Length: 503
Image 1 (spheres, one colour):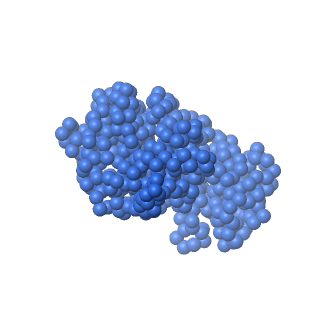
Image 2 (cartoon, helix red, strand yellow):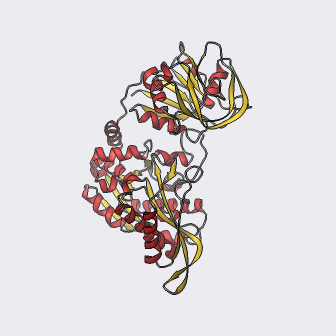
Image 3 (cartoon, rainbow, N blue to C red):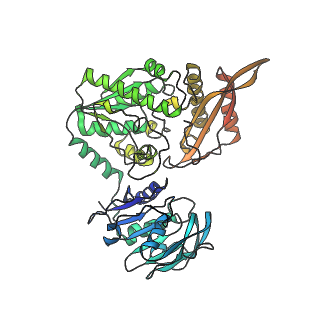
């Protein structure tokens, strides 16, 4: 399969380049910034943005083979400056340019073909090309960047100062397609039908029995069904009721998964999980504690029902990136229980068939496999469950508030016909208290935080502007129906700088 190799120079958004290119049915893969390029290893290379300056001591640079392989190269932001430096130009510190700028297209052929005479382009840089390298021509500029886009057509090397991968850049996807398909000649062969077939073929080649942890959510359900169809009786799925599930989730998961013909067993470990979390308030400690306890439950099950060779999980690409386990140097945002939380003593090899997919790609695989819409369309739910929606120590009272309030949020969105149009919706609760009035009585209760966001791949998200009537309905029901809930607040922070989950 043709692929575009994206070299990660430290930007949290390097993955978005991959994501946009995959949208074109062209496979793109993230790799370390200094990864060598093997002959025939890629149809083209993209150098991502990053926080460094090319003239700084120790600034990251690509392996020399990248420019020697003869494949097309596109530098974005920091990558643009690397291109300038590599071919004899000069980069200098300049006035910072952040936000939307008007890009004037000087040459509308090739890389900038089909986008019009000018577009809004998203800038995020403090350096600029002072001198364009010999043999390069300027093909685009802004008021602050005289060389915002450059090209050496003979060698098929390009640099752009702006970020085409972000939604704020108009026709950004067209620019990336011009490079990946038009200039690199990559074929559009990346489909979820092809992925499913390849994944099942790889799983079939594994030996030994497979133990798969499932929750009833889309990620673990898709992973389980892929493995079930590839490995048959070698697969045993375990649903661990950790006491941190959504209301009615255990019963629904059992019904759906068994309906798909999957061999499923349920382990009620709620008491041991809640005991493990008692007195733990730090978010990272909670995540790691949940991951560790999951591993202990699976290990005990494997010893009793085994032997098993593999532990399968529904780990996704954003989980890997945020946990700092991706192929590039992006920093750790938070440890996901199924990535950073697995202990060395686990004793099982890890099988993660979805670890290179984004959430919306998993939804497409779900449709390919025929998974019911009630599963494929359900909102994401964190692996540590309500432990990360209970801020501070996890207590039975706070758990019940978060669980009941989350159900109300989902019911009200469904009633308003909005559930399917938002990415994720839930309620969180912490230790903050407020005074309310019920009837003629004064009541001291918890503040419930409602969070509803829009996203594509969970790496960025914006808060949803819900109609006031819907917010009013949610608030009224939570304060009237839930004992211990006094106030309702609506979270309006986007990601970044916030995360989707509170902890």
